[in-house]
Each structure stands twice: as structure tokens, then as C-alpha cells.
Length: 438
Image (tube, rainbow, N blue to C red; front, side, top):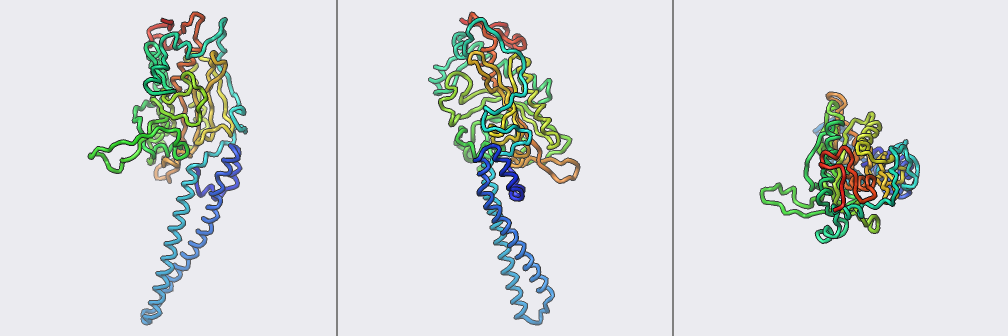
């Protein structure tokens, strides 16, 4: 969330910056602009009444108590002024609360280094890694390969849960597990991340902290739980299925004040993720690219503001290391302002080559959110002992989406006879170097 007072004081600058995203993003400050003017007027009225109240209080203190009538009149005037000040303060608090609620739906401001543009067509490729695999046959899509290998079943998944679910079995299930295990070992043993296993059901407050609520509620799966008598009654109400471990990992420190010596914090987790994919119907209706349930290894870093852009480069390199280890061809693109996610100030998309589709597809999105999430989740740190707490910066990225990585392995390592070579780093985990049909 943006700082309400800073937005009020520099409204034209924020409007210009948000217009880089879209005209609608810039216009999202229209109501905030109205409230900002009301805020200034209300602050002036409040300060004027406070000055009158202070003067009346001083006059009353100097007044000789020998004149009861005058003393009573002054006391009534002081009472009236105090009530007016209190009413104005309540009105100001309500106005600021409304402004905060509005700002919960306003996206983050793009960093100056983010390229201009309106859509993914304007994203800028910053590097391409490896060579595209060459085939002397027509490469197949992953869904055809998976079904021929007997490891991927969409029909039985639909029988269980409906569209956009899948069942992996045999070598497919082992491959999924091997990929997740490889990713976690790489991030924890080589890159210093702490692995976390946490709840898959989260409160609305956690989703508010990272920016999924209130704006993207339609993309979430919500459940209403029954609360046992021994449970805290304040915990009654809706819980949400985790859309990404970014939510739980970032909110581990919600409401806390950290010490500078603790930063940076680096967390990773493998979780199933659940998304309704609202508004995406008709897109990627076949295969594993866009599912309601999918596995993902998430990377989250909590850092001091100084050097947070460099931390984004570091986090992105950690996600790339997975693809390099697997020997997969990919590219990295800097997202333009119009394609940024809601909470991001800067994002790199890592896109893996899928020869069966003849296209690059996103496999990781690595973002710096600045203090946008930290302000919502109230995560602060002290730069020095006894220093005033200030907001941290947060970063997140997929390291990687496991299902999409499995897709890339199937498509890039396929062979003419329908078999699929296993990347060297996974062979010991799978106990084979080739997956064969039948």
C-alpha cells in the first residue's frame, strides 16, 4: 500500500507515475485527490480550534476565581472548544481511514528503471540462456507426451475435481517430487534460504498484507470453517486456500520490528497453490500450464531498503540457477510498466522454451515490492539500536513453478520414439535416465 500522507503531499507525482501503468491506474487516485483536499482543510480547522482551546485554557487558568459567573462562562467555552476539537479529530481519523481503504486498491508505483509499455508485447528481453533444442522430428506438446508415457491423466482428474486439474502417477509423480526436492535443496544448501513448512489455509489479514485482498478476491478459493469451542472465538470466519507461499512466507514477520542484523531474511517453501484463474477462461485450457491447483517452490526475501534493487538481481539469479542446473533453455524479460503485477515496483519474468508449443512461457516471476507489502503487513526494522523503526522491503519469486518445469523437461528432453531423457541432476532421484512409454 502507498503512504497516504506522502500521496497527499505529492499527488501529481504519484498520478504521473501510476499513469505509466495505465490510464485507469492514474485515475485510481481521483477519489484520493478529493480526500486529500478535505484532509488539508480539516487539518487547518483542527489546528485552529486547538489553538483557540489552548488560549482559552490559559485564560481560564489566569482568571481570578472571585467572579463565578465569568469563570463558569470560560469553562463552558473551553468545554465547547474541546468537544469541537474532538469531533474534528474523529472526522479526520475517519477520512484517513477511508483514504487507506482506497489505497488498498491502488497498485504500486513502477521503479524508474522499468521500461515503458502497455502490455507483455512491450516487455524487454534482457538475456537468453542456452540454445534451443533442435529436433529432427516434430516435437510434441507435453500433454501428448505425458499421456503416451502413462504419467499424466486429465480425464480421471476431471472425474475427481472438474476441469483444470490433473493426476500425475508413476514416474510422473516421482518426477514432480524430484523436481521440488531438487529446487529446495539448491536454494537451502547453496543459496542460504531457510525452508519453511506452514499452513495451506490463511486468514484474510495475511492476503491483505501481500496485496491479494481486497482487489483479487475473485481469484481465491475461500472456505468457511467451523470453530471448535476451545478455539479462540476471534478466529471465526473465512480462511483462504493459499494462492502462493509468498503470502505465508512474507507474513511470517507481520506486525514485527526486526533488527538490522537479522536482515536479509531468505525463506523458501514448496506448497500446493490454489487459484480460481478468474478471467482466464479459454486460455491454456489444455495441459498443465494454467491449473486450479499446482505445486510451486517460492522464494521470499525480506531486506533493508538500501540495495533492494540488487537483491532483486540476486533473487532472480537464484531462480535461474534451477533452469541452468536442469539444462533448460530460457530467457529473462524485464516487464514494462503496463504489465507489472499489482504489488511490484520491478519484475523479471523467466520464460522457458516449450518446443511443442513453439513458444516461451513464464515459469517464474521475480518481483521487488519495495515497502508496499511491508506497510500493509506492518513489517519494520531498526537500522541501529534505539533507532526509529522503518519499513523493510520485500521480494518474492517462483523458484520454480514445479508443474511448468515438468512441462519444460518433457518438451525439451523428448526423443523421436516418445521417450524423454531425464536431466542429469534428477537421474539419481528418479533412478533412471530415460522415461519410456508403456
